[in-house]
Length: 448
Image (cartoon, rainbow, N blue to C red; front, side, top):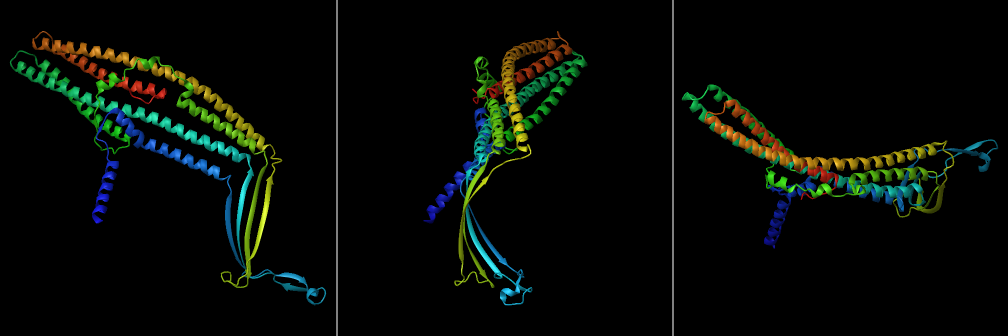
């Protein structure tokens, strides 16, 4: 029996350990999936939905029967005295007798059942709770879309930093080799000192860029971890590379796809806002309606000069009451009318906001499509420019060591190559990010 208990305990420990295990290898899709579950903003949005569900039931429960109990104990430290004509007790006319009515101590226990029969504000409250729940669910959808876009951006920034470091390290190795060979040529008197200095300037610039990029890569990885809800120091291996990710994000069909604006989450949220303003208007109107409620209670009371209420011989006297309460609003000096008019104005504003949201979304979609299309075109352009810049640099390098080109020409070709490399990497990242922006405004969740 003890061995079985130990085995179960070990199995539970393994399961808990796996549940708490953090990922070490992630593709972009896996990163998005993990972030939607563990990102702190996503968690809070999920909690908002749960809170809205509880609020909905809280509102519903106010219209259900309510039972409350009350226990009241009173002890007269000094009883009240009343004056009665003394002649009632055989005294002289015109004189008064001092009398204390009742016992010194009293205890009562009552229970009351109340039930709303009609309350316009309660009916509106039920509708409002339902709308509030929908608002929370739509806010979660909006949050997930933004988190997805943030993960794509953060993932791409890390890949960009990795590629930049690799390119700069390669450039640095080539420059160090060129400088070493140029120094030997200079020492043999076949090259000017200016050529060595030009290469040293270029080498120093690349070294500085490399060190800065390495620091930026650390920050990019830390930001990525925060986006996923991971500890900032956690190490992640990225299984996607920038080139393949860029090619996977080129989708010309996305540019020609049609889309129903009314399905956009921002439009839906604006409709939720309009619905909430309609309910507020209903609420103000309902305040002019009568409220009807009923109650029934029952209780027991006991009296004594000493605290004998817990003894068996103490007498308790029961009572019960049934009642109905009707509250009819009659005159509010114009306050209700002013509140109703204000609610109408806010409703009209929400209608204008809905129309404006629709127009802004149409513009946002067209802008996102244009930016995405330009990023694809720019990517192909920068790719061709890089190939040209690479050939130009290689030709100038050959010419330099053959004594045909100057060190200035070589430096110019190298600077052009380095610029083309950075522009090419940035163009790839732009394709990924611009597609993410377009998919976000179209409410698309797939990265493929």
